[in-house]
Length: 98
Image 1 (tube, rainbow, N blue to C red):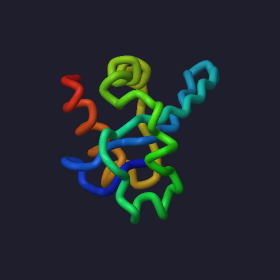
Image 2 (cartoon, one colour; image 1 turned 180 degrees about the vertical axis):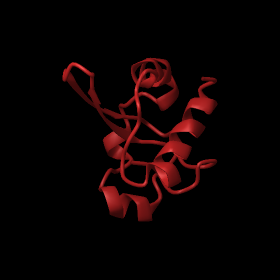
Image 3 (cartoon, rainbow, N blue to C red; image 1 turned 120 degrees about the vertical axis):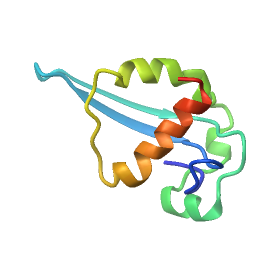
Image 4 (tube, helix red, strand yellow; image 1 turned 90 degrees about the vertical axis):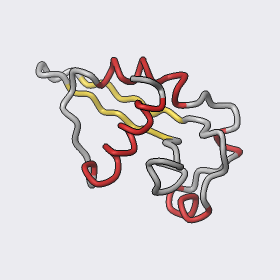
């Protein structure tokens, strides 16, 4: 989930990761991030996450390296990932110098 639709101005506020190894081992993670600016009302209407929900969370950049390492050996998949999720994720990793 994000604060809006712009890869330049908006930020990731929640990620759900399901990692399955070739051996069938499953790891699930859900992480929330403080975006450092208010969530667009239209985005909030879609995902229901409020600014208050994220007040005590770390920013994406603080967890970027561990997320990058977790995802690095993986094939990524998801609905609409090429048009939205992947560009947003790439933008966040670039902002974190990864």
